[in-house]
Image (tube, rainbow over the protein chains, first blue to last red):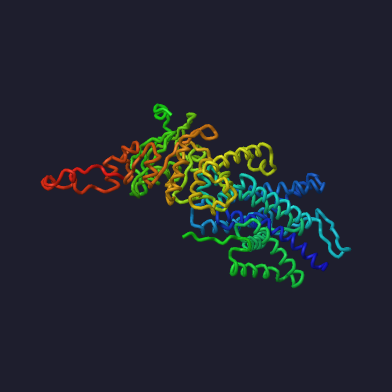
Length: 301
Length: 299
């Protein structure tokens, strides 16, 4: 039982991270109908920006941990948003009216470019970070121990989710976004600046991915230029599992995948956890292609 | 409203509009004026270029030649042929489509509030204020809600406010589209076949709504001119003040409904060339005069 709870918490924190990235996939798919394959790299950049910010603050002599964390989070979200915005502006917007395959290829190109860009800038070696937030919360007489970082990940994700849901459902930006999702042309005719809404979608997705990047940096303490690939593919799986285009679906998909990975690692063996995840992707695509919470696409006749 | 006031306010001026698609000339040198306080109907047989003209006015197409100017009641003037679609919308032109294009997955009320996006965006400072519920945004949202309710009332959809727009009956969806267009507070409302698919009772309600829009001041104090494409002649003749007839991309007639209805060019376009008129004089001479020179037919 202790072990189960331990894995449950590990899985939830991992799932939170996948969910945060998956939202970026799902939102972009919802609004322009393409899979942004460079999104995993955006998350990787988020992790790097967080690391660089931390080291820069260390050099400046700022060592108070809460401040360091807040600045890291803010800087990471800010700079990564700019990357997200630029990727859309450079690689996707000029291809907006091309056949659907063109932006897809452009996205793959962008992904490779960003990986190599980071490798050139930061080197190919893994970058370690000493634990900033050490310590564990022990539960059940020490049988279950949860690191504060994992706890913080779950909490921050919850807060972001609530804020984000409010943003989408309550504000005019969210309404315009949903409107663009359904009919961009009509939204434009009602005075919505569709290009700007699309840009903001990329910015929001990138900001959430940056949070995920920073959390991974804090939990595992090591990052490299290649982490975006696997995390990206798994988060994409999460988005598909939840139903691409659905925000709660992305979050749910992330959590499901996180839990599967954690339990598989815990009970079967960690070497096969990716197989478990991707088997799930295949099964979902075969039996429920619209995902858990996705709406079936109704063909207009 | 006096006649002089009507003639003094050209709202939309279309001058020498030509739209070519490769070798196809969809609109050829069309000029006309639509005024505030009038319902201007654009009619013509299928393929006459009505929708193309609409698309030019609303920014879907950039005309090959010609000038489209929109003059606001406050004197501001916009050259529509040079503006992208969303800017045209912001400058006060709203339109609906032949097929219904509501945001089906959103509620009726939300459809009307999306239409007020710009106002809300200005008030909310990129949604930040909206997220934290700051007073400026709350106030703007309240005003947006008021306007939405006003138009819901007008198109008799108040009790459906929380429905998903896609679940409304067809006639109600049509009315909602008009309400949504009006929520952008336009000075010119362009309707592409608003009566298509409506039963007689529904098109009667539509006529009522359109005359209301023509005659009443909007909550913001402005009035809205109406430009519509319509095939349902009973609707056109009943409500329009000014009819422009297109055929093969050209304007063939322009005037009040009665004079247009009796215009031989219009009759020819709708009913075809009168074959008897082509008869050589020696044959025609043998026929009764009523056949050679038939009285104008009712459309």
